[in-house]
Length: 106
Image (cartoon, rainbow, N blue to C red):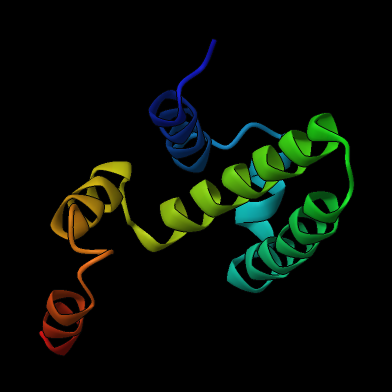
């Protein structure tokens, strides 16, 4: 089974060494606007799937969204570790509204 980090590394490899005919190469070739359009489409599909009873459909759509977000991260030069670091900064603060507002000011 491929981890998120492994998928991200594969996306980076495809960005550095394009593989003709690959969907990842297609997205990078089309550029930021195409990637953003796909993020919007996939986000909408996640919302619709979440309203339906099928967990399989929801999981499928979330997987599509995660993939496209990873492509966007690669395009922007943001790593999975960058996201982990940001999430770690928030750990334990989400339920503490006052502390959360303090962080938002930074």
